[in-house]
Image 1: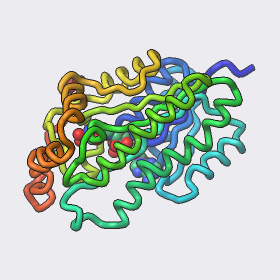
Image 2: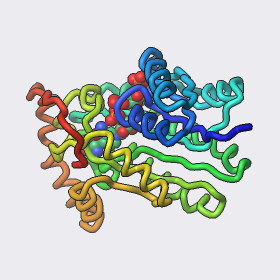
Image 3: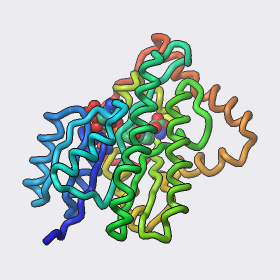
Length: 279
Ligand SMILES: NC(=O)C1=CN([C@@H]2O[C@H](COP(=O)(O)OP(=O)(O)OC[C@H]3O[C@@H](n4cnc5c(N)ncnc54)[C@H](OP(=O)(O)O)[C@@H]3O)[C@@H](O)[C@H]2O)C=CC1
Ligand SMILES: N[C@@H](C=O)C(=O)O
């Protein structure tokens, strides 16, 4: 008899995704862990299986591939797995003046942050509806609430994720499906190594993954539409949309010049994380 519910988490090999996996395992969910880094996923699956007695499956997939979600769906079917909670977390950013960013890298960013997220929802939502319930957590960002000069494609990808999630929630809220847009501000993860500078965190204040993911799961439990962890992040998320859009974009450009300068050789701040924080 099937008792545990299963959560599929993309980008589970590090950062927020690994933290979602740990907190969901502690709640008793079986897991499907998706990312490219096979060794990290297998280590995490073993660790969480040993610690919490859950079953953690590993599914190695590059989500920038055009048929990534179809491959994930086919692999789940082969293994006889169904998914009750989809956490679309995998993602990365690019930054700097637009013309300095590699076009293929931006293309791949949209494939992972946007296309794979929509495609995986297409793969898994029909099964949730057929079984009478389920949930989707889409990882957006505080970058979703305004234009983000020098992170133009990244911010726009997260605006897509926010609005897609809010729309989907309205479509499915009476059919047993919860949809949450999770909009964290800067969090200490490998995100800033990948993007190339800690200056990409324009506020300069970092949270740690534990409390931020706890806030997401509390919001999911409460069936909230979206959540912005941290008071300062909430204030900026809720105040900026009330100003003229062009003014917000102009202010954002001034505040983000550190990102531009860092990518021109100004140097990244490489401070290490310490303690647990919700920025
Ligand atoms: N850290 C922050 O300040 C914030 C992050 N976010 C969002 O949180 C999410 C998680 O990022 P975070 O944990 O911070 O960063 P990390 O860099 O620590 O984790 C990113 C995860 O995404 C996976 N990933 C990246 N590219 C691909 C790919 N092509 N195919 C499959 N998986 C991929 C990585 O796995 P692998 O390399 O093994 O494939 C990794 O597991 C992202 O969507 C990010 O935009 C939102 C707001 C703030
Ligand atoms: N929200 C963070 C990333 O998405 C940031 O502000 O850097």
